[in-house]
Length: 216
Image (cartoon, rainbow, N blue to C red; front, side, top):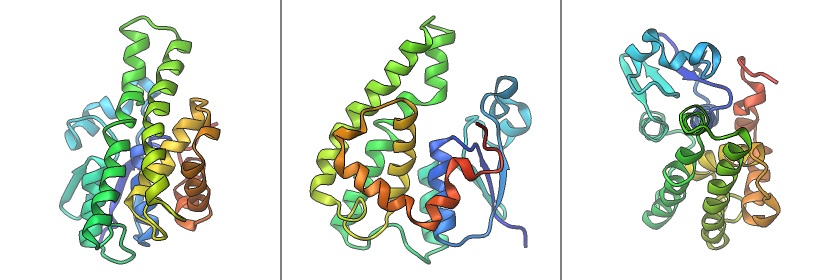
């Protein structure tokens, strides 16, 4: 039987989320890099677009099943590979978990992702410093809300003391925040949970620096 296959880019926060879950659930998978910048972006070339017409990573193949979008992949993994669950069973904790996931997934990451930043520069003629300021602003704004939610919900991790999907979303977004020089001293709850997560083997294996396509 073929291993599940993950199309990924080392610095893609959406791919990073899925890598964490795969490692946490001890799923043996093949990593296939898709370079988002080289030659205009491999994700926009015909071979990859035939798999994923949206032209984004991650894309996950498991047997005859192909799935795009990180949330869809993560929920598929949760159902098919129930070991080491990442979605709380308690209805309220589950709702809080998904609330934090979506705050990042729809409220922060899309506004600062690569295609938006490229559009600012290439189509709207903005300078690189404006691009960086844009990303910093939207991450900071989102983190202010996230920090306020987490002060009531978090302990060791985003939702109490159990690892959840919310942590899979949080850590990659902190990685991006550091890339764009967000003042993380403003967010002690986010920092505490991020530091706890980074001690875990699944986050270390999923770290961008530890991927086969990692670049300086």
